[in-house]
Image (cartoon, rainbow over all chains, first blue to last red; front, side):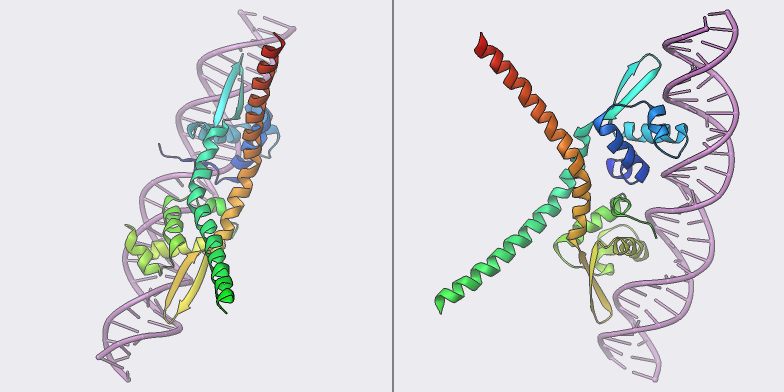
Length: 108
Length: 108
DNA sequence: TATATTTGCAACTGATTGATTGCAAATTAA
DNA sequence: TTAATTTGCAATCAATCAGTTGCAAATATA
């Protein structure tokens, strides 16, 4: 696979689409009406999001309703985890400084 | 330049750089040695990351040490928040289904 | 001083991207 | 059936991107 979820959310239009279809399923035409681009441009974005497994699709006749498959979003969160740990550790280090200061106070 | 943090993390090399300099500050040369690209390519990535305010730099003589400015990472987390709420709501809806089932059991 | 090291900037290249137009397949309605 | 609607796919284009080479500025070392 060429594209990953980080490239998928790099484009602002795609991010807007993801937000739009997070609450309700919409057809490509309905999505395109919300933006200032052609239907085909939106269709391309949908294709990319689909390749990244970010969409659930439901066909009813000639219409296709797309909705966000939210599980894939967790991969971004998982990548952020390693940094969260670092910034949590910084708080811990700050705690340690405060503890050391307090210990010194008690020694005096 | 209209680059944002989402474009910054779209490139796999830049994501690797961010991880690399999250634990310790490194010079562009030291960073470039870790990857299979030229120093200038890394320097370009550093410039982009710097424009997105993802770096702290500390000059010592002719060397420049770069380290991750972790605060900016929170913007990604903040964008994810709106989706977390949705997937939390789904859990709540699942809870409600289970509660309803249990209530019916008690009624029998 | 002269020389080596570290870095950023400019120019160039090949590949990719976002968007457009046009067209064909599938479905629905007259 | 015929006509209209919805969608996906192919071809195309301008802009951007990641990478390279070369060079100049600043700093450290002989």
